[in-house]
Image 1 (tube, rainbow over the protein chains, first blue to last red):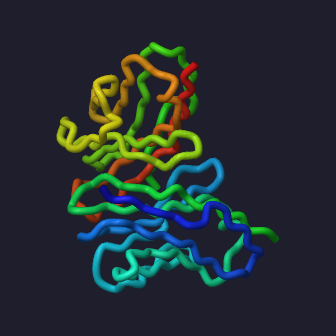
Image 2: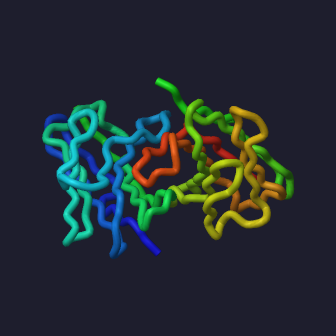
Length: 113
Length: 115
């Protein structure tokens, strides 16, 4: 069965620092990859997704992610974080033409002023 | 922007009692899901529902669970006889179609506590 690993459970950054959150998945076939964000007190929202084509995907609020098939990775990046980026970030995968999302454990990001 | 809504936001129940969690998916969406997140653990898929029937379910979704679309707007998850281990945040989600690339939109969740 497929699985998703997020390496960092808690990340603390200062404003303007660069962000990279790791995500690896285990599945040998075709995958669709997602990053969701959950701001405090709010519901899960889609940041970006990859289905095919350009492996560098741009999402909302200046976030981007790169799909590296050889590394089974889909890391999330942002060049300069803001205090408002404080949230929990979830990587998720769909495999084999199915519709269920398999989530990672999430990374809690805190951005300090 | 249309949103998925869920009621109640919190529910406390006694072990063995039945609970019904309610969701109103986005109005033009046709594919519905339930996920849950036990405190400190991953968000886990429970079930997907399309065209008035279950299209996929996980091993968690046993006979104690059922889903229903009782009318044109609501989508419900029923737990027939709750157990302590059913305590979790339950998320409803919906998508426009069952197409593989469709985004799932999530509701705010219902926090269920079984005592």
